[in-house]
Length: 315
Image (cartoon, rainbow, N blue to C red):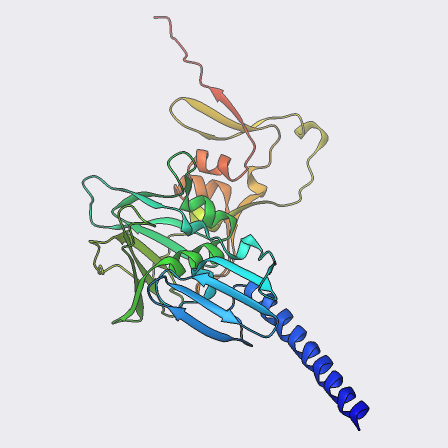
């Protein structure tokens, strides 16, 4: 009987260890993915703003920024220990956000009280209101918000909204976010998120910015950002391949291709935000000033630029 009882105890302990290991592993994976653990007791100290998680095989803790209802990705100093003594590293990429750093804004002097398209891709459009630039980081290591948006617009916008301290629904399918935490922002910002059909735009202003009439209205203004250069296949005669083609000129310069091909170059845009896909000839883009020659160069258009020769007439 004693042997059977001892065997049962061992089996229970082994079973408990297996379950404990499974739960500890699952919670570690959750913490590593910026999610709060499940299989544990939680205790929050409002004075220190530290929340502890205690389970059979592990302990963990985090320092919250606002309160213990916030998601884990908003917290900092996240720790995980097996048996309360063995430190297990939590991947830093889940613990740090671009927006843990300072958000500094450069306000527009003599603001005309109109929003300006700051960034656009196929996923979203971001406008600024009375702001020239938004930088993230320390004085010597600043990055523009535009650069971060170019790297990953969805992730950057989500991180920015997650750092904002107050959110509320406003009339007209618009969500307002505000940031007033001086540890994060030197001046504070207000962000408006549109939630309408074909309009999911973001508007960023100062803490003084109130909702403007043009916020979250449909605007067909993103051609500069989302258009791409496409060159159709074409066959040239042998004598044409060495013939340069002037496709554009201004007051001071001639712009030419090394061979005739202007009629085969288009600016294309995808079907997005309720608009159909477009394919616009290069000459139409230039003649209608949809893009400047410099903007086309930034998009990758290759051409030769030659200074015009002034002709003098002898009288």
